[in-house]
Image (tube, rainbow, N blue to C red; front, side, top):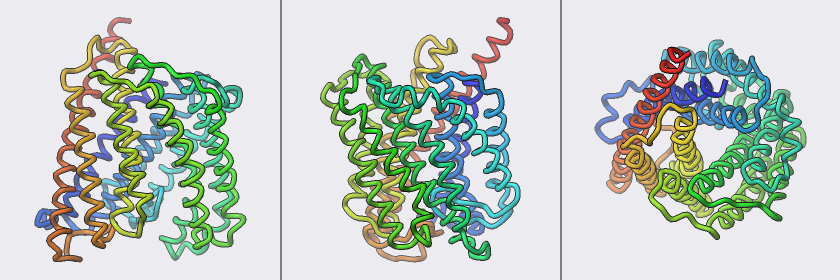
Length: 425
């Protein structure tokens, strides 16, 4: 099911990217008037869920299938059905869009069915690989080390969801209900993304001609696991999973449990730097630039404004870009192409540079108090904020161009390759 997972992840990224463009349009001076206000939050929810949650977790499953193969005939169909439910309700505009963190929700039966099916497939895929993951958890091979960690973290997400359910409170308070439900498992999801990011960096370095072997760093994933166990217990320990004390704990868990190990691994990679003009090297450097830009924003201090999405877009799109680079390797490995598309380097630069401008635009606007998750620009007449939002839109256009080139190229290559293989047989 590796290749169908690849195709599904590309489609999800493409649809999420389309919704991202609509969200950016709804935040851009003058242009926001072209966008229907009532659909803004549906587009925002759909973008996050499709381009971040579904894409990243589906691609993670693909990597598990590729590097940790196990007989698993069901999980793909569950995530496919889940994807369809989430995508349909996001584009339809039906239900109530709730802009809670980590898995923003559309309060509608179709969304719930989609989310349950998708995560059931994802967790099933992790459970069948648990024995392989435990065996390779402290491997000296950094790719197996980090990928095995991601499998265990997926199960931690499941456990954190189960401990969060009794703490959700009344469903009449939609935002708090879903915030409490997803706060702990959502934080563990970020640890999982960190593990997959480390896999991607080491794998891209290997593809660029530089191999690494872990020494003491092979035990760094103990930090991921230790803080994830504590996050499983956060809803139990704290009366309210989103109380101030619980939030302070989760912020500490990020800074220490996630940030420090990734920094150490990055330093390990940079000790033997890759300097060439290959697709893989370009991807590695751009991914690291985006990640550390997002982390620098976080350590500079955050409030509940546009600096928050500036931070997490840096951290998350660093992984998206890394998986784009790995995608070029996969389609060659599948035998669908012999040489990289001529647009590959241009696409990576456009997406990476566009996201840098996008992040900086959000950051500067947030630094002046621009609120997050807000339609239009009626909240301000500050010229600096408006110019920053304009910079955000310029970055969005560049990133969308890069994203569109990638999605169309991958879909064309995938469909052509699968079509050829069918007739070859």
